[in-house]
Length: 381
Image 1: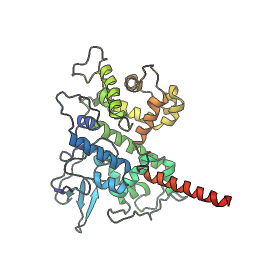
Image 2 (image 1 turned 45 degrees about the horizontal axis):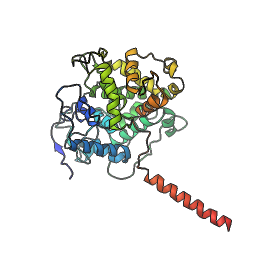
Image 3 (image 1 turned 90 degrees about the vertical axis):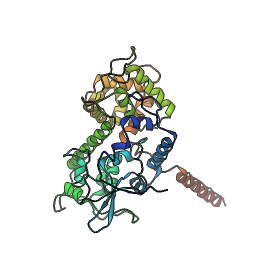
Image 4 (image 1 turned 45 degrees about the vertical axis):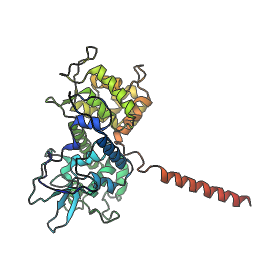
């Protein structure tokens, strides 16, 4: 049954980022390992089933259904109509496997938000790129589709949507009447100026892409509850890396166990004497590693010269964690199978996979084969 929408004061505390703490996220992903906080309860059977269902929605559903499922706000407009909106945390949750939607919210079930009555508090910085989408940093369906496109394709592919003078065509529409799809005025102003007659340069698009990437990195990193030094443990960093890998739960547990044995659980958790002292991973180190992933195709062919390819120098401690996590055969080398292929999925956040179960493609292939066979019979006759 559809959960009823809630009428209440909208705050980030009531709609927590990711629907739970970093520890809950890790368990929700099904790693089955004890978390870094002692006494943490495991996710129950019901929650595991819900998470598996939500992962199928992320993988196989249409963008409008994904948006309607993971969006948490329904804004009341001055004329009495309503519009479904996402928060930045909702957007990241919609593309991150294993993160459970907040309780009581789901498909077409939202928190009602009346700007004239309710206070909206989102944990985003004043200079956040999401404010280019509007003064409240909220994401409409058209914004959501734009951000998905921006995350799943190269800038050159995005710019195909423009004319030869760099002006974006504004006659696009979406099918159906469920969601409003008019062009975002704030985003149009950001890209094309106040009068909408400006040109969108590649440099401007690259700037937006860099800001968006850093913002997503920040939200992902904060979900794992960094300490006062803005660091997360090596174990949580490892969980971040394999979020989009598509590994079985048994393989995830095995990989994470190696990291736990090598680095312990944290500075104050009483690690094994054999484990190295846990130094943690800072946000700066995480961003630098994400920068490496942007060049992962080049790194694939020049792994030993990554600092020349990506233009950065990774911290030795980050490399230690990566080696422990991915070096399954213990030969102190990372093969394409062990590392690069997983990081390619990580870079695209799962958006490189086809959004269907394969049945349509299978039936299409059968139809093509049957047609070719019939044509062959007639040709022989």
